[in-house]
Length: 249
Ligand code: PGA
Image 1 (cartoon, rainbow, N blue to C red):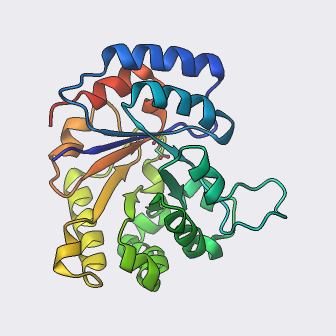
Image 2 (image 1 turned 180 degrees about the horizontal axis):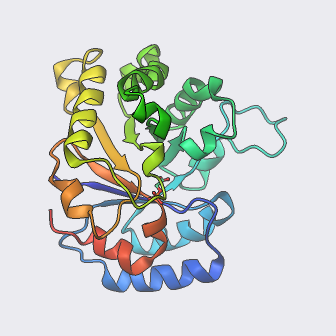
């Protein structure tokens, strides 16, 4: 099965960067081994990246966040409807860098808004270093998944992708032991499966994120419960990102 390979550009990029990036990417990406690729630029660059998507059709477009409602009087905010209007199909929801600066109370509403506007949310969860050290990983994941487990609309739709991103692994060059990744992914899937029919169960997708690179991609993909990856730093290096996308699975 094809894996999802998602590039989270965070607060990085420029028009010049984008031009060079897609010049290289389109020449070097192999049609035969193409995985499901999603690029998440920052808001100002969504339209620019979308223009390359329209020509090349080799990737999908996603946004890094959106507001939880569509009311007009929200200066500085961007709604899910607007993102869908300019060509996004995916939205990251609850990335740990966003969580560290914002109130998390509305995550469930953001997820609903993304789904109601015909896009797929990628819901980011994961423990920080002290939670890991205190053996709290599973209880942190339980709490974070509660946003989904309590919400009937989300479950009826079942078009949610989970990204397990241990906060301590993001941008550090360190990843959990592969057996831990396999265990946590299976744990997440089993939690969600409790609320789903057996037909829906096979649609659960769990990505791994945190220091993914060409050095560890083979090992990460060797875990059978890993359905794809969410890549930050390494996705900004187009040669490295293209190599990961061309990885034979
Ligand atoms: P990283 O970031 O690959 O640079 O660790 C991943 C992320 O924050 O999604």
